[in-house]
Length: 115
Length: 110
Image (cartoon, rainbow over the protein chains, first blue to last red):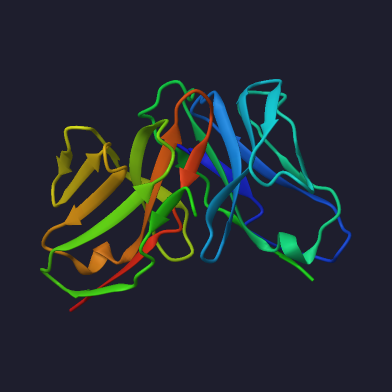
């Protein structure tokens, strides 16, 4: 029972480099999302998806792209890394949002440092 | 003003103590409420949902006051293993907006 799997766990990038953070879930959850967590600010939503082929922007989408070709996978792409993107990134999934009392299952996170 | 506000703490309590966390939210369209627990350098994990009538899960009791837009979490008989950050989470109806509070840090000492 894997739940939500994120890779890599740690990454150091140079400014301007691009990379993809991987997220996969095996719970057949319709809803998937990416958050970043910075000290004192709580989790902030970057992008989310309500199903395969459907994505939308969250609170802080600039500098990130997503796609959802399958129910299971929801990769996050950093287009040109900047030091301001140094953060901990969490992928989360749940049953469809209309089921309001379903909470999220989070992946274990990716700690990204941009130098 | 943040949409979900929590006292950042830290709360330092001895084992066996009762501790209460408060959370206020500003969006009157908020529909669902949760408490998550996050251990140091780990992912958040759902602790409990919060229902209008209040609900209890073992040593944990959650309360919701919609009129005052206020949520609380009470932990009785604190254990060392309760040391963590507790996140207040609010889902807003009519969309896919979920707002996380910045969290309240709890240290339980022997």
